[in-house]
Length: 163
Image (cartoon, rainbow, N blue to C red):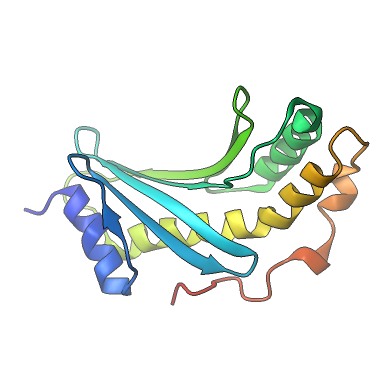
């Protein structure tokens, strides 16, 4: 029977997505061109617990002057999500989106793994312009509620380059 990591690599191959395995780990890295820029992914299979985790990093560092508005933005965004969550590394000022799934033995699915990847890319792409605005207004008041209603910042294609 294939390992969970093999299901992950097979899902990427089936979708014709480029990826790089990380030597000595059950991890692959990939990047996708999305509406607001390149999204970098880290996908890890945890064989011992039957889980797959997909993480996208914003690759933007936020200073202490942005952390309160950034925290509010992530909290309000997470409140509306059903799958996955945005995270902030408070000490280093980095933002990530993470989605994970636990697969009972024999239930790994290429389609479900691909869905985790799509969700991660779409959510990070959706938040990218909001993160840029928060960073550009460092130290200033940011009306996060109003920012979250801006439809002009939404990507046109909800599934960029993932078909």
